[in-house]
Length: 151
Ligand code: HEC
Image 1 (cartoon, helix red, strand yellow):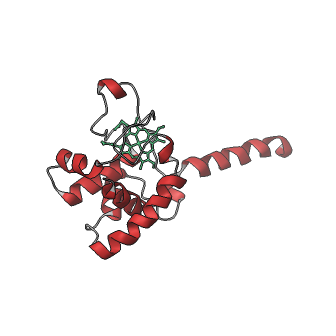
Image 2 (image 1 turned 135 degrees about the vertical axis):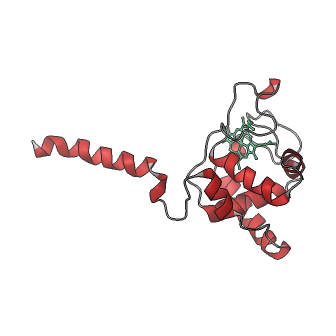
Image 3 (image 1 turned 60 degrees about the horizontal axis):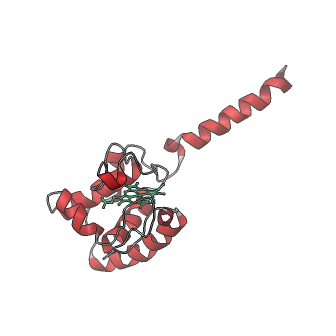
């Protein structure tokens, strides 16, 4: 009996471990709380430079570039080009640099609840971004700083 139940128990545990983000150190599950943890402040220039380097690597490692170009052209990809992203995010968020960064964190974690500027336009109708809710708050700070550096 135990031998027959054990595999099911183990796979259930494994599944729980994979879906429960609360158990990943450094990951704040709630998007609102995560945005505040990642961004207590706008990073000063010196810190920003380090974050941008790290964020660029994360952008590649997290497969963002499979759907986004980092220049002005879409280049046939599923998501909008991210060149000039900072201007759009600021426009969307009362020109407040902290608010725009926090909003971007929330978008990455839950894109349906916090859709970007292009969501629902003809070009992107019915397309949603995949939620990324397993990135640590530290890494989100780096990733978003990189997005804000794209021209
Ligand atoms: C499966 C394709 C896909 C992947 C992978 C993806 N995105 Fe997106 N992304 C989209 C789509 C589609 C949109 C447009 C809909 C929206 O804004 O909600 C979008 C929108 C965005 C926006 C808003 C752009 C704007 O100008 O408003 C940002 C920022 C963004 N993605 C960042 C990222 C980051 C960072 C990653 C990696 C962690 C990523 N995306 C991974 C498809 C994707």
